[in-house]
Image 1 (cartoon, helix red, strand yellow):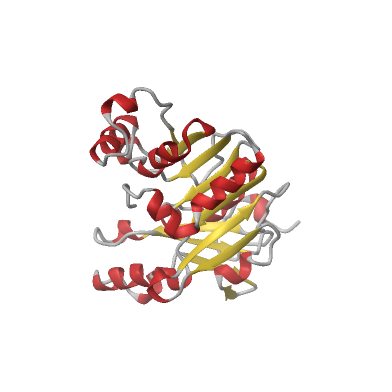
Image 2 (tube, rainbow, N blue to C red):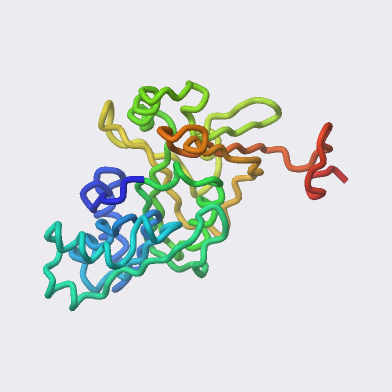
Amino acid sequence: MPKDRGLKEAQDYFDLIPLIENQLKKKKKIKILDAGCGYGIAMMDIVKKFGDRVEVHGFLDNSRWGNPNIMKKESIKRGIFTKSEIKKIKLPKYHYCDASVKLPFKSNTFDVIYSMAMVYLVDDKVNFFEEANRILSPNGIARISSPFGRETRGRRNYLKNKGMPNHYLEFYEIWDKGKEIEFHKYINKFKGIRVVVRGSGLKERNYVEIKKQPKIDLKLRFITSIDYNFIWKDWGGVKSIYTTQFKFNPRYKKSDKSYYRK
């Protein structure tokens, strides 16, 4: 997970600055969440640009990837704030949690959620999309970089060079009645969530956009995940495997009773 990406990279990924500006036209002050915030560079860039009109939060699964002390040190090092300036601002707040389970935020909290480089490491990616919708405020919007389609070419080439086989170069598997469905084609069927493609060629960027809904249920059961780094130290990323089949009678193994047909 790149830990030092700033607002410039977020703008390049999903046109973040106009999104924040548009939300500020509706409210005097908005709440923003950076999912997978790393060193907090993008969060500090946002505070620098928008001042006290924004309240910024970020989360990670572990403090070793980022914390307030690292954020302050890196912000001064990069010239975002001086030592004296940083004492006068309200710092973004760090939280530590797992994006694969229920997030520790109240419903209807954030006006903007963005995530540049986290989802490919999450075990249950669909849970995070559904949770992002839950914690969005009314009229809130989330933009989440997610590894699928052409946007993963660079990552695929990198992993291929590390010896990763082709069947491990995807980060989603969705199965419906024994047939695999492409991730973007599946989620585009649901209201309020879609895949957006920006740019072309090497500059193409794909992301998932979520516009607040009363509820988003992608109707997928999480089966398991495969952490490629557990297989070999030079590999990275997590494949998440899902099925549309909820109720069934396992043929060979015992399973959670909730999955049995009644």
